[in-house]
Length: 127
Image 1 (cartoon, one colour):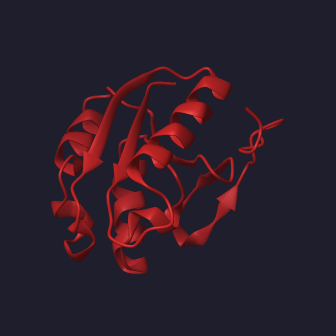
Image 2 (tube, one colour):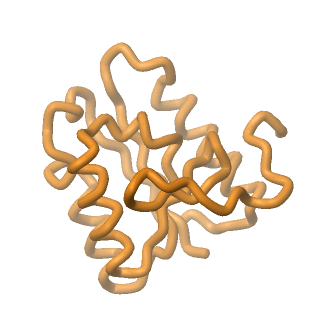
């Protein structure tokens, strides 16, 4: 799987950007997925629609050209967007064959709030 990590810097978050990076990188190591890119959205972007955030246009382009197969996020809450935005974002990625993986839960995140297929033997707390 060719993975892309999406890290979002937000105000008053429980995780720093560095902590989010470590969680995602740990997941990639466990799953033996190479990381093609790591995009970081700048502070304060939680007020912007997700489609206008730094890196998202590049992510969509990579998805459309087959350069990425998996988007790795810390968890859904760290995307800081409305449910409608999240659903649109996930659907746009899926149309290009890109699935979203939550590093904290070890689950695939799909539209409609579905969390399915826990990765066997995956436990975020393990090193």
